[in-house]
Amino acid sequence: MAETVLDYEAEAAHYDRTRGGVPRAGAAAEAVLRLVPPGARTLLDLACGTGLVTERLTRPGLRVYGADAAHAMLRVADGRVPGRVVRSDARRLPLPDASVDAVGAVWLLHLVPFAAEIVTEAARVLRPGGVLVATVDKDAAHDVGSDIDEILRPHRSAAAASDRADLITGHAAAHGLEPAPGTHFTGYGQGATPRDTVRKLRAGYFASWFPGDPATAETLVAALAALPDQDRPRAEPRYRLACFVRRG
Image (cartoon, rainbow, N blue to C red):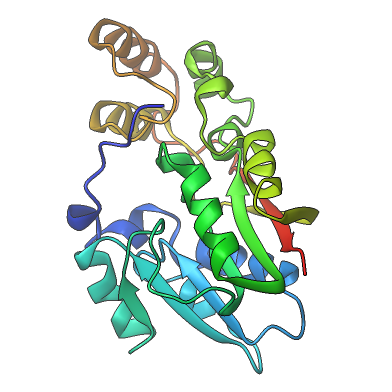
């Protein structure tokens, strides 16, 4: 899989506005909390970004922390969850073994070619009975059967996705994490438009499934530009949230 070309240092200033904002963040947080055991006391939100989801992961008795690799993202997040965010690579967390009750990885594993290492590290820091909650099959969720998808679908490769559910399940099993029932949530505000899809294609937002061949990209751009209703959002995606429990 190609690594994403997005610069999350530069993205921080407008990240929330362009990713569905509070409605999407609230839906994600509610879904995560549905899968976190009632007795959990600590949750680590990996790739917490601006902390918009992190600050909504609240319920009595649960203390939430965030980790991200991007300085600019963390500056925003620290304003939302002061003193509870840290700059860290998700593969090398500054935590002892068996130290947290839950780890969240929302919209992370599809971005990186080292998803297996992230799962390994999550398993290390989880206490027995703790859970890893992660979005899987993220790119597939964006195929809502629209006219945009009819153009993009032949160029999407599920085999290239680093967050394929079967792959993540295999990584988890290798490190003592057993699958448990998951859930879904809606990506509010993320219905695609043809015009914005062209912008994202050119900006490299689809690096996880599109290799960036210039000739193919321009063919897709031309087809997308010919669609009607250039600024009308199509249906919103439904994200899949998987859950894995640390064996005791």
